[in-house]
Image 1 (cartoon, rainbow, N blue to C red):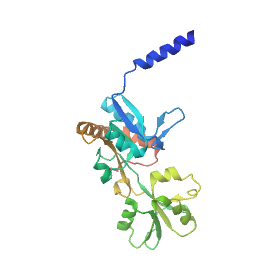
Image 2: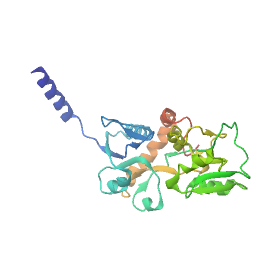
Image 3: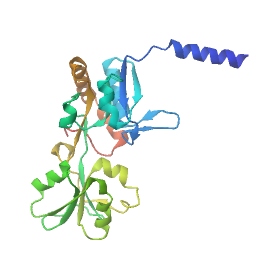
Image 4: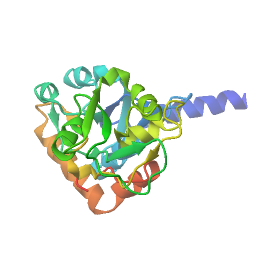
Length: 251
């Protein structure tokens, strides 16, 4: 009897909870940016940024799980008002929805098959990079004299294999990708060569928060809230919980 009354009380409590005033679309499958545990609870950098934005916006937010490929369509169809899921604002996506200022961008790293205290001169060295990325474009502008070898984006694992086999001298990779990859067998044993190339260099893609094209007022509010998170140190504290380097696109 007591268990039944407790269950009823819990149900009444849940039913009396105020509904969300702002729904946020997330994928939830890309740690450390977002992940979902066995109970459906979300965590990660994107999740904490979204929660901090909701506090700044004075909104009660709810999360909507949406596969990454469906985020833009879900936003346009009104399943949620904001998408906070590390979306690159490509030209095609900008034609469909509006984007805030970039809220994260990874530094880039040169990786070597053995520990190196400093980045060696690039001239004369074979540097592997994924084709069609800002990293490849950055190398073309800044690695004069290097032999730049471009790899298909669907064959990323060939980069560490060729580095270990001596067919490359260095690999140029996003630092956030390295964080996720470094414990995988192909990537184990590699080490950063010198200091990261800063996020603000433009060597990597920038990621932004998406809203519907017609929601200009919400876009402005989210942009202002992002600026406030940076100004009061909230962004830096969240950053430090997930990465040992800054992913602030302005640093």
